Length: 215
Image 1 (cartoon, rainbow, N blue to C red):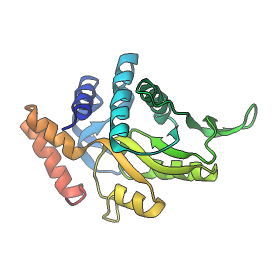
Image 2 (image 1 turned 60 degrees about the vertical axis):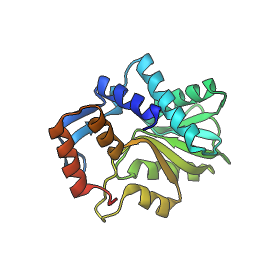
Image 3 (image 1 turned 135 degrees about the horizontal axis):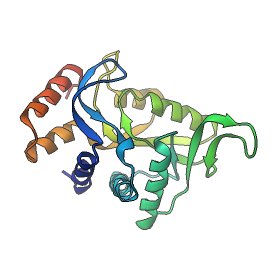
Image 4 (image 1 turned 90 degrees about the vertical axis):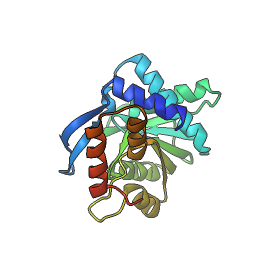
């Protein structure tokens, strides 16, 4: 497992980004784990997270011109990742959106760098159904940007109501590639190798057997 993945899991557990138990998701499914990147709430933790994102981006070899952070959690993520990439010698512009259009001042829903004509990498927190990424894709496309890829912290690797995984649908429907810092399979591997609770591991395996994307 790559170093940045191990670093991320340690950070996620320390900051309670990852919690285990019984949680009702927006989909109505009862999940044995819950992921909330909003628990990253200090400068040092955000810096550590941003460097994990930067490592994953650089390892992917993606070619892009601009980072885009969807409101709300994607906004500090995109800014922090831009800083982390700049520290590695890749200084890139970033932009983000408002939830509601501003009707005074500069107006509009987009803030930051001009996105027109730019190849955009969307930076977000978690991929479940892909709804937020579709919204960002539409917003960027209408602004004459070219959204080519997205990066998330966690891919839950779940099937949707139609029986297909979010990554496959996003690739097919809007022609966008998706990379993640970690997947739920990485989580299982980390828990197994680090002496995680056997009952928790079994619960996640059972959940994936029911709702996970086929291997």
